[in-house]
Every structure is written in C-alpha cells, then in structure tokens.
Length: 493
Image 1 (cartoon, rainbow, N blue to C red):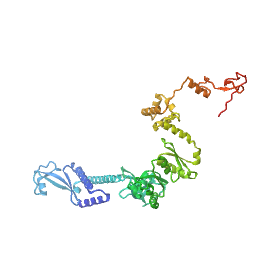
Image 2: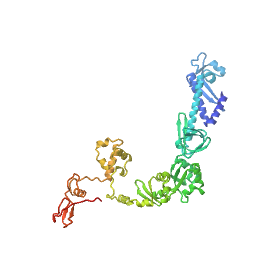
Image 3: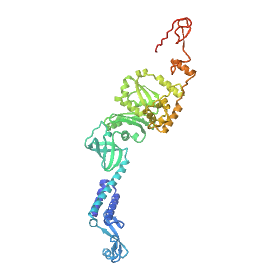
C-alpha cells in the first residue's frame, strides 16, 4: 500500500499542480475519517508518513492487566502487547498498525476514496481560483479546442477557458488548434468546476496589447487616457505623455508604424485611431474627429456638453464616418455631444441666439431665455425629471400646479427628490403671480386686443383719421370731427 500511495502522491502533485503537503493532509484526513467510520471514534488514530511519503495508520492503545480489557478499540491485553513488544508494561501505550485492506470495510474504503478525490478536486479548484483570480485583466494565450452554441472553449493548459459569442470580434473566425490570445475578464466557481471567461472585445484587451507592444505605455511614460471601441470595426485611443520629450502618438505608432501594425494584426485588421488627449475640450474634440480635419469647434452648451464641429464639404463624410461610426466614437471618447456641420450649413444656423443666451447666463441676466421645463433646471435629478415626464409633467408651471396628494401618488418619486426639486425651482426660476387688476395687466391685455375673460380693456389703442387727422378708436364707425365712415382691417404679419 505504501509504495503505491507514495507514487500516487507524486503523480497527483505533478499533474494537478497541488503541493504535496496539501495532498498528505488530505490523505491523513481521509484515513482518519475511514477509521472513525469503522471503529466509531478517531481519538486514538494516528497517521504517519515516512521520508519517501509512505503512509501508515496506527491505533494508540493502553496496555491493561489480564482480563481487564473493557474497550478493545482503546485498550489491549498485556500478553498481546508483549507479543508485539517484549518490553511492554501495564499502563504503557502502544501503537498498533492498522491494515486498511483488512480492518476497514469495503464501504468505508470506497467512501474514503471518494472523499479523497473530492477533497483533492476542491483543493485544485481553490488553488487554480487563487492563481487565475490574480490574472483578471491580463492577456492569456490558449488554443481552440471546441465550439458549442457559439461559445469557443480554449485550452489554457491547466484549465479550459470559455470565449462567449458576445466577446468575440465579428471580424474573426477560428478553427481547431488555432492560437487565441484573449483577456481574462471573469473567474467564477461553479458546481461543475472553475469557469474562466475570456474576451477579445473589451477595451482593456486593446490596452493590454498596447502595454505588450509599446514599452512607453508599459512603464507609464505614455498613458492611455481613454479607449472607445466598436469591436471589429474601429478603435479610438486618447494618449498623453508624462515627459515633454516623448511624443505619445509617435511612441504608440512606432518607427514606420511597426508598433501599430502589430496591434492591428492582432485585432485582425481593425482600424485604430491614436490621438493626443487635451484638457481643453475644443482641441480634444478636434483631435477626436480624426482622421478628418476640423476647422473650428464651437461650444454650444458647456453644462450639457454640447458642441458643434465645422468641417469642409469634402470632409463631412469622413468626419461622420460610415453609418456615423467616427462621430459616435468621438462622442464617447470626449464625453460630449458633437454635431458635425459643413461651412455652408454652419452659415445658415442662427448661432446668435445661442451666444446671447450664453452671455445672459454668464452675467446672470434674468432677461435671457427663461427655464420652463423641469429637465432644464441646473443639477436636476435626471431620474426624478424622467419620472415626472412619464406622468405627463414636463413644464415647471404644471409641477407647481399639482397638489401634495397628487405628488405623493406618483410612482418612483421620493419626498427627498420632490424637496430638492422645489429648492431648484426657488433658486433658478422667478415665480410671478398673475395680476387680475391694475395698469400692468391692462397694458398687457391692450396689446393683445382682448382680455382673458372676454371684456374690453380700460386702455384702447388710438389712431388718426385718414381724412382730418382727428383721434379715433377701433370702436368708432364715423369720425367725430369730419363724419367720414370708418372701417378697420388687420393684416397678419
């Protein structure tokens, strides 16, 4: 038994990458469990290993006088003990080797084997989990093994990884035994074993490849600000340098494009735009729309991150990209909403109104555009604004007209959100109560020609008689001075 066991231990240690100490501890626990199953207790069981990993199990028994054995499991007769060791004396303890093949029942042996296998599998799972958990976010190389329901199973040596369909680039196809380089994104324990999820579509996969191909990125001389990607089609990187004498874009491209070509080859021909990051949003937007050359960038709303990029007519399609891919990636890269226009389209736009509003907000002029919608309030909770919109409340005046009971009955709106909304309205919106009587109300009504309830205004607009120049009003049918008949006609502007 010992020789076979020691060989098995060595083989397990080599094949499964488990330390021999863990295997020996597992065997010890298994034998003790089998001993307890056989004799009902394991308090006197002792497992020992020799230098060459041979294993033996002993029962420690106390030597008692003749005919004084009450517990055969823990006690032994003096005569039997002296047969094993002539120097044995009453009261001493003696170790008696147990042969599992003879002493243990067949069921106990089978149970011990199963327990040992299960324990070793758990140890291997924990060991591999710890090893691969530390590698999340790193590149690993494996080989195509099989495919099932669109997912590719990759042989990683010790383990098998899975490359789901959603993490595969649409540009790539694989065959059996193909070499696959992928990013470890998840390591999970499952009832069937360890699951290692791989990806070739994550932006971190591109980042890891650049770290492998560009030494300046690896040592942080050049850092990647942000990566956006449409897997299989186009990737945009914004980079910057921590040293003035290092060009970040040139370092990533490499001499004669060697470095960038290696990355493109790994991504199966996917287009890559490398641009310089700039903290100034206008310059950053210009860079982000590469390869198109942008003539000018106009910030329409800095708070809402809305900007306008002006390009020449010939570069409009290049700036927008196929199916809007280039401008869409640029939007995600700079985190701005970019509208691309040609010179002719820009000339037709009324930018003056936007400029007036921006100046009004800058100097706090209340005569600028008024905030009428809840979503326009600065710093408004977007979830609260959307909840009100779902309930048909878009304008601030509609919100103020609601009673407390109506507000409390709205779903997905907490009391805290309602209180914050009221504070925003008090801070940014000037609430003017309507005047039922007075000169100001009368003047406003006179300009419209009729009051809100259908009655005539106190002030009536006056005209001159075309014949004699006397003062006349719209309610006169004849001039009071010359008696000429009057008729009033209104032309729509």
